[in-house]
Image (cartoon, rainbow, N blue to C red; front, side, top):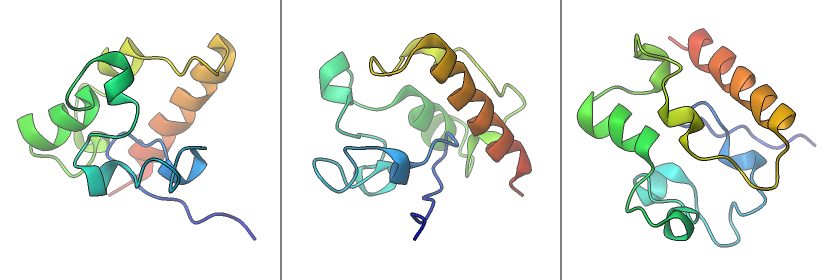
Length: 99
């Protein structure tokens, strides 16, 4: 059975994350403070903060600046550059398809 895709403001799905439900309930329940923020020394995900707090948008697909530098500021250390580029392209496609 396929995992239910969890929509996030950034287009990446929490359901695809190995940390989801283990040490992190996801971006929405944490208000943009997923598990990884403590490891990079920030209080809130910069994508979440920009989208929800600064621009008051439901998701980045509504932003004319998609894809901005916030998407490339942090890279999952478990991904190769090629995997990261593919994940970003998939997130962008997902966001642009949303209403």
